[in-house]
Image (cartoon, rainbow, N blue to C red; front, side, top):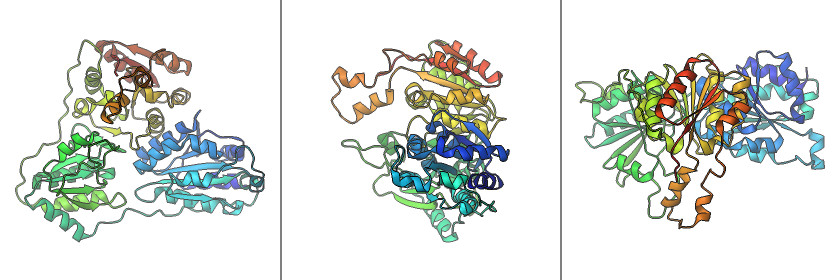
Length: 520
């Protein structure tokens, strides 16, 4: 057994069943090894950023790592943005990066680079396999590292000569580090803050946004009058009818500050202290109001649901003040007339299927989506955790592979879509049940807003031209059709409703270009 076969066999034995791949010459022995391990499914992606984003979506939905097979340092660099998003999402993800043969590296071949340094910028664990006899044990350690609570990117560097050299052996799975129980005194301190009578907010993130944890948080809020908020961009938020509703902390720092205004106790449950995405002249870097005490109930690596359940039990004795209850199923009426971001959100809220997985990179076109879908049937909402655009289509790829029995809806801004449009080819090749909606306003609308917020002078056409996506307009229906995805274009709310209903009813991939009024 060679090193590649040892790695592939060990990964399968450790529960890794999917490898999103964009391989090159250095990885050919690993590619060949997949024929000897049928339990490890290879999914071809045409760009490394699609492979890493797909592995992120898979890990978010399963809680288990998929592998992303990348070619040398440049391949890793191509996948780095979505590995950054995965790091911010705390996704269990295994990046396997092929490298030159050990004896070849000293010749400084054209593709030679510092893979270890690149990997270290997004990985919580990096290891280079030195010998084929270590391949299996290193692979098992890599899986355990990816699964280490709360989840992280683990990178395994695989030199070519290690893959082809005999002497590899299969290794047994290694137990990962599980979430840490929260000490009782920490829970009692948080309970005391909630019982203080002063205004309090519980900020939820990570596993606190799953159904059981949300129910516990809601009990604690009802018992004490505290408010619940969710982190702005959640890796996975279970929401919809029957699940306690939680508003997100606003993206704009001044709006987030308004949400937190008057708060005296901010209790973090699986979330980190909020910070503005960017610095702006004359605006604060954090929305936390002066004089507000921040309490850490549970770190992301802790048993967050357990801590919330214990907190709810501690403060929930006696009569609780009123608080919003989980919404019952309630569909908004189908809007009519012009297709705008607001009417599109209404259509999505009216038609979203039960059990859907929504991958949201709608950006400025998504402002109305949370309210429109709050009472839709239960669904999962996956967000752009790290802010590196080009995530939505790959994220949907991985979610659909992970959950083949659930419909996936990718909500995608037109500018972001062009970063990783080749994901559509994988949607078609694998016949994934993904409906992609492209919000086509022909502008980097969010950058138009940011240009104004930074105070940069923007009176000239040169600056505005860099934010414009027209001349020519991008034909997303033609792009999708060229990659094998059935596509249509909607210009009215009624068009959009009819096309979305059809896409949800017919298995397999579809794309709808939602033509919006121009922005910017």
